[in-house]
Length: 291
Ligand SMILES: C[S@@+](CC[C@H](N)C(=O)[O-])C[C@H]1O[C@@H](n2cnc3c(N)ncnc32)[C@H](O)[C@@H]1O
Image (tube, rainbow, N blue to C red; front, side, top):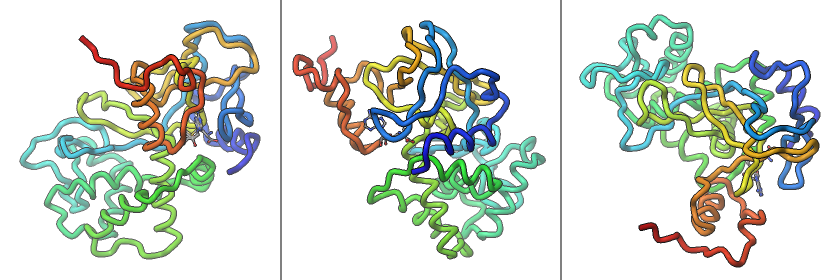
């Protein structure tokens, strides 16, 4: 894993206007919690905005119940009968976005892989677009992506492996395939779930260079929201934070029981939380019975 200083340089090279602050109130350092973390460079007041961060990578999550007839560029709901790109890349697309540069590059990439059934909506093909977007990164963006933590488990290769069977000419080059697998692992470790601003039941996974470095606490000192237009994450202090203190978020829902949080963190983020709340023997580990 690269050191905090190098990571900060990469973020600085790649950062979108929102992170370009003259005198940021945060810095990246070695964390007492895990790996690298983000620290306050001055005292922060409860409610104060700490930073705004734009996604490096964003795209559909897609679960079985999500509507496939959703444009992969603007995420608006499309006619359920005819919604796939007319050029044969297999991606759902609205008329307006078919003219956009972003889709043209993605369309070309998917067409070069030759979808087996380009006129049949396929959840594996559509879901792959988020990972495939990292193929279109420039060298700086690739370096930043690679600097993010990638948790490895027994399943992270399945996403690309399963989707590859839906193409006749999927890359076989080891380096490319490894890059795609690693992108999945990085998304699994660091991404946030954001609802599409066009439809609330269409979840997106978004990777933020700085917000992705925040470590977890079950009683975090920040909260976050997303800007509906560009999916910028806005991080605010949830209590007063002292200069030098680590800035944390919660990866779970705050009101989940100890047991639920611990299971979720172990299964999705591969760690056992040792925070004060988790270590409190007076807190029940069972799910509270709500009336
Ligand atoms: C989004 S990353 C956080 C940034 C990471 N520390 C880094 O250096 O890039 C999430 C990973 O950080 C580690 N992590 C975050 N919070 C933790 C905590 N409270 N206890 C143990 N590990 C934690 C886990 O390995 C987790 O999968």
